[in-house]
Length: 94
Image (cartoon, rainbow, N blue to C red; front, side):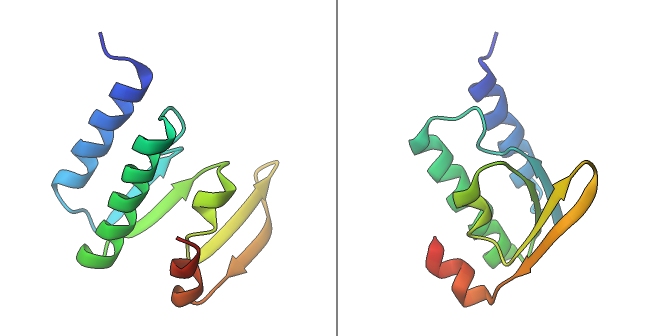
């Protein structure tokens, strides 16, 4: 039986294998240690850059969110914030 973190890594590997046009990831680093989370983040943003994959991330991790070009904040199912930043600004945070 796999741990939560191991299951998450397997799910990410399955998601990356086909280089999808859009990748939906719900808390992609939530059950991972800091080192593994960093590697997953690198893979996500590399896939975005090299394969042109659009990433739709759901996260409570402010540092991960800060690396994106757009952040939609939700509360009670409603959009309460919409932040856009230049691609260079998002990459500078990484």
